[in-house]
Length: 142
Length: 70
Image 1: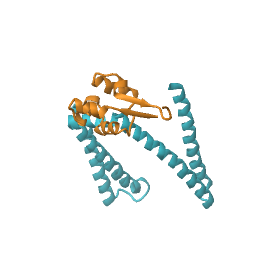
Image 2: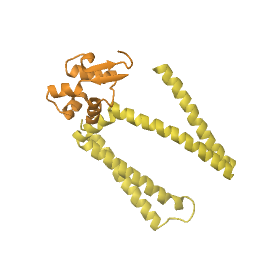
Image 3: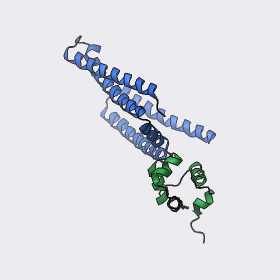
């Protein structure tokens, strides 16, 4: 179950994340420029660096200990956990569609601009069509 | 539809803990606990795994009761 290669890879990515975070902080304190990418890149570096560092450190710890790795794999593949996750996702999807509808209506009423409303509507329609596609696909598969 | 089971009784008969049974079946301990309390009905695959673990058939472990029938 132990996978030393994975541990090393994840640890390397965690170090890369830390380097990105440090670079972001450094560029925030001593900016390279005052326009465009020089203004936004430090925040992005900090964000990506923190995400990478946190996620990969967790993964490295997970892969380091075979007992924890085995336990996590069982928890991940457990059919009840999978059912719970899928039920939660389905609930959140329904909530998301309602929330997105509400946001589109509010934006349209506030007259924020046709482009924003159209993009949000396109995303809404995309999710709806994707749902229909997967219903059809699973109907054939199952 | 009600699905009862004898999992807890069988487990205790064999003198094994929930953790040990969970390990043997490659499921979480919470799943065993939910199965024993009747909150969760297993998939047919897990039902077979449980029955085979105890050397029994599915009908010996799980009892199906149709509601409304006498």
